[in-house]
Image 1 (cartoon, rainbow over the protein chains, first blue to last red):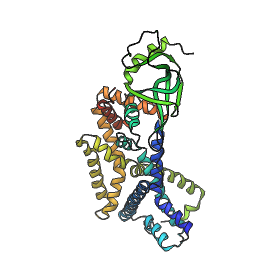
Image 2 (image 1 turned 45 degrees about the horizontal axis):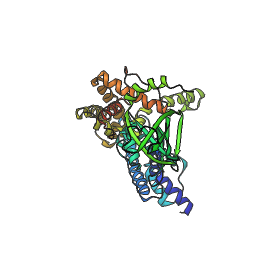
Image 3 (image 1 turned 60 degrees about the horizontal axis):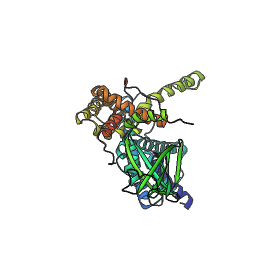
Length: 270
Length: 153
């Protein structure tokens, strides 16, 4: 078999596994917290693709065999119409084409193509299903680490992850900080935070130490003072270059809903 | 079989309509083997164990009927027909049982979670007055949410 045809054939055989990987990457990518998707050249990705493909083709073989046997059974019970010869199992046809190297007639090629399409639909349907979602929910599959425990999981379970992001935009001992609900984080290949986005944030100054002549607040012992908050609104996206550190607290969504309407009345949104 | 009329325009048109009807009927087993049968392990594991009877009983009944109709040969073909036709029925039955045994509070909580997800994915919203396809899973989400502990502040 020529090299190019061999490549195409292997892609066709591995297609269910590749589709599963792509669908999984798409699922993970749809969430707010995102890491780079798994590289296809990674050993684990190849192993997963091969295992899923082999299992899918095996199940496909079983299903086709069952369908053919069922058709024969129905025909034997009601032999009024002659249905013609029982077709070969589509996967046997594929195997014969791959090993024999002879082109297959169009009539016989329809069955393997239809089976492959059904296999792919089955995989896509399973990966998009709620049962797979529930199975996956508690596991940190994409290796997000603290982002998974403190942002993704609380957000999925009715909590709002409120992030305080302290930036490195400093003037003297003052720095700018933002406080808001974390809606999106991007992580690099090693899990480091690349950027973080806060929804309807408040901006405030934090101060290391105390200004002279002013009475120290309650934070005197720690030496960090935070000043009055100013409502920014919209979304602020903070790049890792200016983030000094991030503090995340998870507050119950129901609690927030009790507080937020009052705040909205007090603060004029311009 | 007499194929004399097969060439006429009317018969071919009727044949086209018939094949459309057959396709619609075939959608049930197709959905069963492509989608529904792979949900069964998860659904059974979420439910009380006694509810796996909702899968077993229709399956056995179908097997009994098919054996009566098709005869004792071709076990594999009959098993395939059972595997293809049962899951959709079993999922409907389990959903119905779960809906009947759920409290109104649980239904409301499940509907809230479903609407939260549906709003994100632009799917139609549901009401807690009538069950919806993913009800069994949303009930499990309600349970998991109730026992979830956020990281300490």
